[in-house]
Image (cartoon, rainbow, N blue to C red; front, side, top):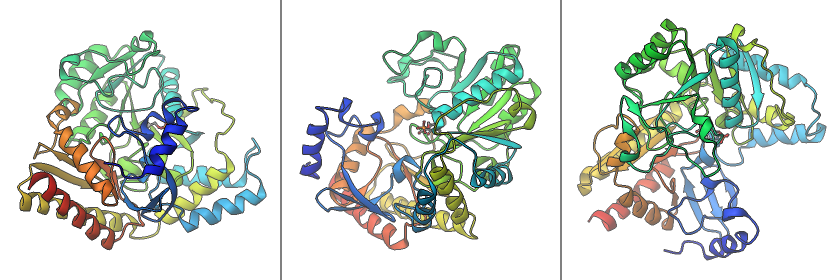
Length: 432
Ligand SMILES: Cc1ncc(COP(=O)(O)O)c(C=O)c1O
């Protein structure tokens, strides 16, 4: 169904000059023929090239926690713009942001900066190896930590058959050109299974530097940690002299100001943060215990802590630390999740819908929480793609390939009610 013919035309044109027609492989899903070209955004709304308005639940892949073009961030960035955009020197505002982050992020005695979550996770791998003198890192199936060779392992295996046994999984490469050697120092396990985890850690503790996890598995179809799971990871890693890294690139500043560590009360040794920390500007970083952070690892980066991004981050934190912000986000998310569940019952649709503060999920074909990435194959993706296309045509923009969505502080009850109206109509069309 053609949604925006101008976007279609522009995408055809882009492909003549730009590989794949988009700047990130994720800016267009494999299921859609072309992406919408964004003309502008404001608050919870986005406009395409033909002036069509969408209520947006993509949140720019997570950063836009204050909606599009938030006034407080615009002001801070413009002020900095006039003073200079880049010096490759420290600034007073960098000191202020660093102090603030050590106050906000549980367990972060010191912080460091990069521009993207991918880089920041690579820094955390290097820190863990430098501190422990060990080489290997354990990651979980379905967890995304960035596109680099060692990070991009068993993120999205295409079939259950390609994954091997639960206690002895096969490692999957994600891209042509990825070094097979990158797998040598990476262990992979299914998530949410403490027994399997403990056995593996005990067996390999002498060679494992760290375990990296998204505290909530928000990549692939989202999976929440089972009660006690994060606490279990903490206990088992500590007991076996293995470091625990929380990749809070999504959960950071989204579940609480102090991310999942604050929300669940589990403090990792190292944390990776990014996305929502600057509400739409490219800044990311690491934090952790002083003795680990002072292992002699201090990576360079031309744009590390760029002053515009630092200004944006300080302004974003200023907005997010106002009283009641996270309660407000959770209330709006709750209204949407409650409404979707009710529509599921009304139309007799088998679905699973849940929310966590400012992130929510919707899957068809299942009606109970998934346990790990392997359950992902039970989800009716074909139904989701039809749902996505029908919603887009009616002005609601969801994730083009999977059921994970964001709420921003700009989303209102009216947005939610309009969205539920669209869902009601689409459920009628698809499942009536
Ligand atoms: C949990 C997580 N970690 C790391 C990354 C990589 O961050 P970036 O895209 O900024 O490199 C992402 C990106 O989506 C992510 O979701």
